Structures are given as C-alpha cells and as structure tokens.
Image (cartoon, rainbow, N blue to C red; front, top):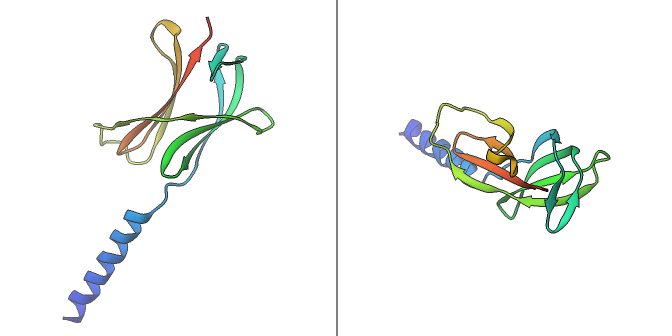
Length: 122
C-alpha cells in the first residue's frame, strides 16, 4: 500500500512539472544572413546576427541582435508539428528558400518545428 501511494505521488509530481515547465531560451548563436533583408518596413544589411529563441507569454519568438548583442527586433515564430519523432533533442537549420525569396532559421524539436522567416530584399 505504501509503495502504491508513493508511486502515485511521484507520478503526480513529475506530470505536474512537465505540464507547468517553462521552455527555456535557446541561444542559436551567430547566424549569417547572406543578403539584405526587410523586417517591419525597415531595411537590414546582410551580415552576422546573434539570434535567440525565446518565449514571451508562452509564445515562441526569435530575438535578433547585432554583433554587440543589442536587440534589433523580435520575429514571431511560425510553428508546425513535427512528424519525424526520431529527433530527441533539437537541431538548427539555416537556409535560403526556393527562388531566394526568404531566409529561414528552423529549430527542429521532437514535438514541433519552430521557424523564423526573413524577407530578402530585391
């Protein structure tokens, strides 16, 4: 009886921690954006930017900093469920998309894909 109660309390404790756990900030690091891009009507030059995946009110956002790590802007993340459950931790992919219209930063997590898109200036 004591063993059963102990296991139930232990299970409730771990489930509660999983439900209320805040996702931590993930430092993506220095990202080289190969072409000039536009964000919120403002032009940014190509180059190296420091990017962090953060959470504001439970919503993922990408914080984009300059070389001196001063915040330039926040980019809202686009989330897609991950059907590939082989990923255990996370991976990061940086790539130009078809026709060089967008630059994408993708964080691949076991349960979801978190994307940031940057519109390339023509």
